[in-house]
Length: 262
Image 1 (tube, rainbow, N blue to C red):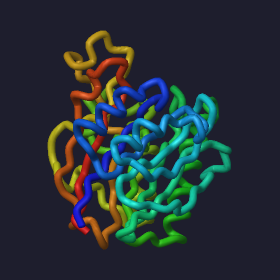
Image 2 (cartoon, helix red, strand yellow):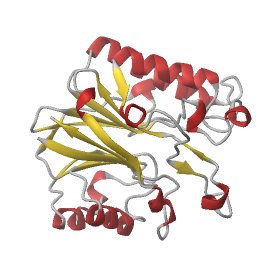
Image 3 (cartoon, one colour):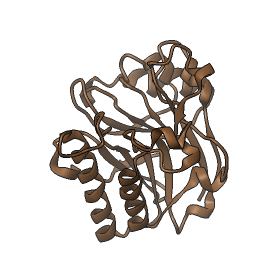
Image 4 (cartoon, rainbow, N blue to C red):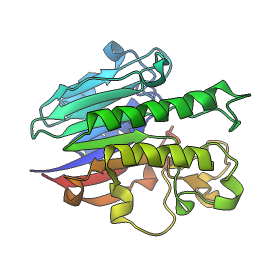
């Protein structure tokens, strides 16, 4: 069985329903994982998604904040959710596909503006969230699993437009990169995007603050697709749909894709 999966921080699934439908129509991934849905589950606009064949959904929602959802053409059942760092936020949902693959969809806290937990509570929450993820993966020892989402960290030097200038900027600081690496190692996760595209600048997010995001191209790779080692060799076809960043009323993130033959 071959299936294509996409992950996208949509920054309000109701406000941006038209571009979600555009993606589903034009790209037709078998599974679409959304973050920052900013909607209670019951208000996610399912009718249009179902009309395109996405008859299965698992989700966790919150009014106006956070929220994660997995839409699937493939039969899928909910496989739980965790409240890491006890934040009370809708930041994780898992779904198990009929082929036995578990998909974890994450929205890791952004961490605020200052990379110092002593003066910025949100940065501390981000580090604690990653620590809890790490410990959970150590205990769970995931198998036949895919992890996707807005992890809000660009780990490599070529995942940001300027490594030197972003070393003290939240999302690329050494302590965040270290926490993410520990989380990845704990679950035996393989970065599928970088397995497929091992070198070169690669971004999935461009700030709304830039007058011309495309020309400035000051991006970061904050959105990720990982797989456990037992299925990582089946992953291929990774790409980032940069054009979606320029669609009407866009998210500041672009969708990331990978295909798995399982």
